[in-house]
Length: 223
Image 1: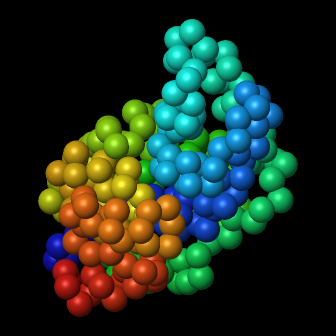
Image 2: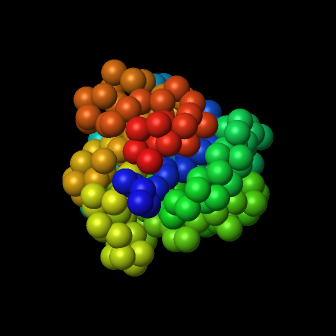
């Protein structure tokens, strides 16, 4: 019997190398809409949050109630740029398809918990032909944003797994905070948003430099 039969993955920066595309779209939207130049570091730090939460954190000068129209304009500009106009590629990390095939072959149940919108996730899943790997998915906008544990709670309830049977895999502290808030163990990967030092603050079981190390890590430590 597996120690963690349910594996819940973040999307951007964990399975898909999309950080630069997100950063450049956030920068474009802020410049176009409110004429503010965001640094790449500022934009990277909010990846993993829901879009409105990310924009709110990037623009504390815009009150969520008084400036809702401007916040929505930034969000609309981001969505248009990221999904249709941005030429920066967002490929799978090398080996992701083989990893997911192996994990399913080994009997793991796979799910997604992401800060992407439903439309953004569906576009990316279809682009990379990964839908068959995941039994369920949760997105920001439909659920409370990370690090609130609602997405994980819903996945556990739907699939009838306990928190102790579940492992969250993500590249940002928002992923690991969400896992901690749900009393779920986590694994960090360092090829996305946050470095090992930042991820280790949230006490993951390990930090992997490459997502493809996950299968070997699980088989050696938790089989």
